[in-house]
Amino acid sequence: MLNLRPVKLLPVREQAAASLREAIITRSIPAGEVLPLEATARALGISVTPVREAFQILARDGLLEVAQNRGAVVLGMTAKNIREHYEIRAALESEACRLVCERGADLAEIERCVNNLVSSGTENYSDLNQSFHYNIWLSSGNSRLVKMLSELWNGLSMGVRTTRDEYAKKSQAEHENIFSMLKARDSDAAAKLMRNHILRSMDDMLTRYE
Image (cartoon, rainbow, N blue to C red; front, side, top):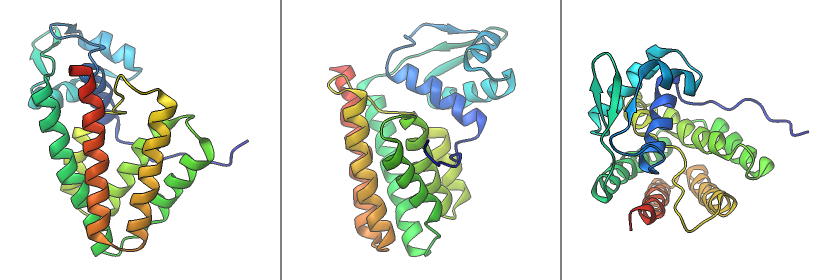
């Protein structure tokens, strides 16, 4: 049995927003779908309060229209929306890496995420992937940056031309390279690798919109 401690994940409302955003981006939930508040909460296994807050987050992103007394209506995504979303993430996440290096942040939790990913392979990859990114944001020491990135998280950026195992192995190799530059305190290289990592995810996701 693997000796893994629990990973640190996003707060509940951001988790809910991420699950819904991923489903909208991948078109598992189509445009025009009505998401009743209570039914969505039951499906996610959480209370209605974080779901209501998640609806507000996604409404600000233009993904949902909150409908009084009946939850929200899905507005859907376009290739342009996808590009804008990932371009913002790339800018913010690369800056988080830069701050981690420049501030000499403790890398213990980030390293543990990398080691957990290596030890567990592709099992539980979604949570471990989220934890890797989240711990980098936290280590940046910028709470406003953490909040912004938490509300932009969208889960795994799986395209249509790769399997889950292939995606996990490619992503994990990129994580290891990012961590090696964080450990070397090479802010430019770490930021560049993170930017490339996010934009590669964008390209993967855009295969769903061709």
